[in-house]
Length: 259
Image: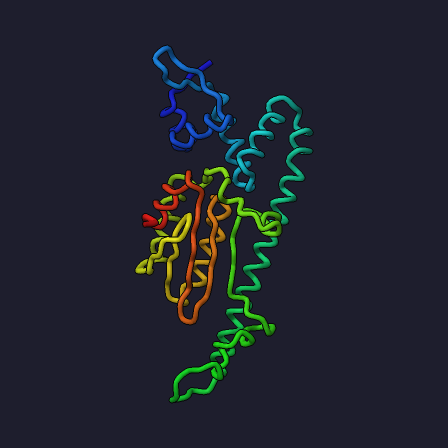
């Protein structure tokens, strides 16, 4: 059987060596050792990493992937299918719930814009009579200006913050990771930065809301350990981003230091 060092496996699979080491510590990717302590992998490691990557793209947590790998290794394809289907159905329900929240948020913004455009121009100071400062001014009579993108509808319903203990691993690598980083830096360029427990708050002009919300939703799909909270405040958008302690470095890579 062909043996590869960790650098060779990283090149073959496109998965960074740091992630390979993390997978080993999480029990997902076993490795042999040379007498001098170097990791060695067989050809089956490439296929195993492809399986892990596919499962992560479906939004599965590493703990779930570990259980699925055991079925994949020991069982027939039909057993993998039976194990995987309810997991995908659960992720789909969570994605639909997040999509509904974003749709409601988008509708409230359209309603606020329409209401604002209909207001008469006045030379006096702006006050609650202007309408858009009132909680009843948004579409549907309610103010939908808060969006929380956290790891799972069920956790939100239970009031839990699962992001604090979520597995820190991101399915976005290489060119895709670089492009996403550039997009975030453009979206929050010039932002006012305020440390918050577990992360930081970035305040940007409200005109960037659509772009920031789109990026936050995309980021949560590949890195579900991030917790995103968006809040409108007049002409400003406050974006709060949090991550578990093990994800602090990845948070800093995207948004800069939190302190």
